[in-house]
Length: 150
Image (cartoon, rainbow, N blue to C red; front, side, top):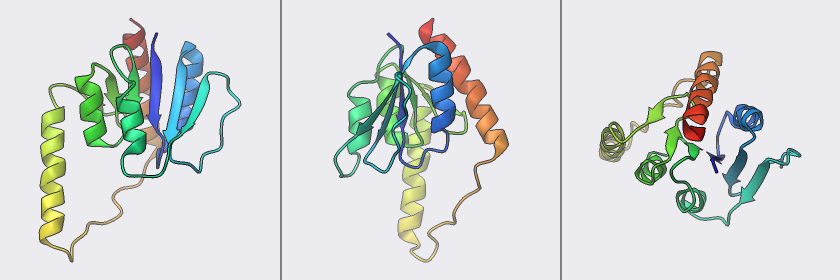
């Protein structure tokens, strides 16, 4: 049975994920370490994990597998879920795949090394999340959900 897992800390597309899960009749797990308002939707389970580094990620990684869809911006979590056979999307609709996850991990590590080497340049806030990103995510999640349900 297909499930949708959302790494909900700092996730800008929880409402969109709930809409798609509801349309497909799929259980949605919204996982975080707190601060979320639970949904009244019977298909949505809000999972509050204990405080600690990567606890929400571990909860998702322990459960996601073939036929499931995961939404996360966390590249190590994405790598674990891809390895387990899940379909994985970023919040902007970009897909993590077996073909690109190695490069994504390497780029993440390179950027961490560059930030560590220059403590004065810690990066900016990045670009904002746009309507186009939200639309791209909805299209991608719909596509992934159809594929996952096969």
